[in-house]
Length: 186
Image (cartoon, rainbow, N blue to C red; front, side, top):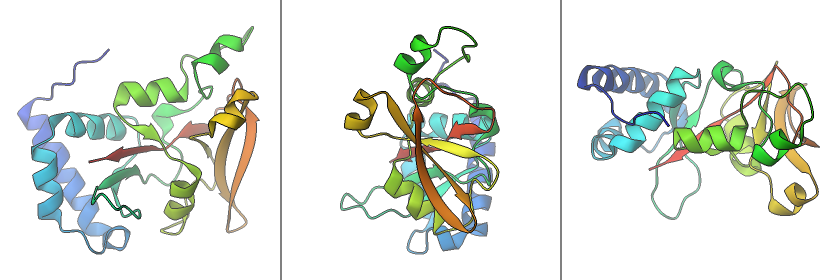
């Protein structure tokens, strides 16, 4: 397990990067002020560390407004394609363990947990796709309902032909162009 400590200079650089991305993409979060985001991040070092991990693995996290009765902020991977540092993964450890050969190094659910984030679910993925065109060449594992997972399946999504698609695969499968998009709720 990696240390969740960040150097102050590293944290400052990350906050500056997040602010620039936030201001550049105001359509993703029209009713949110950066000052509110900054206040929450400064009071939550674990969230800042998770955002660092999202950024380090190519996710380009940004605040995205999801319908929430809790008033939570949601940071989501907004990279054009599924984050490059999180591809070639089985869906979960059970899927990984079921492979007899050619096992990838990790599984999406467990890597997300190590990063302190969750996989995006189908509803969140469809909402993200309303904000831009994501996963035009890649695909992303999605948080899968337990009933599907118990039967050996897992969901993933992508965007082709200007349409968002959600499909299924065996949880043990993995592809060089499939990763996962994380969600961090604060």
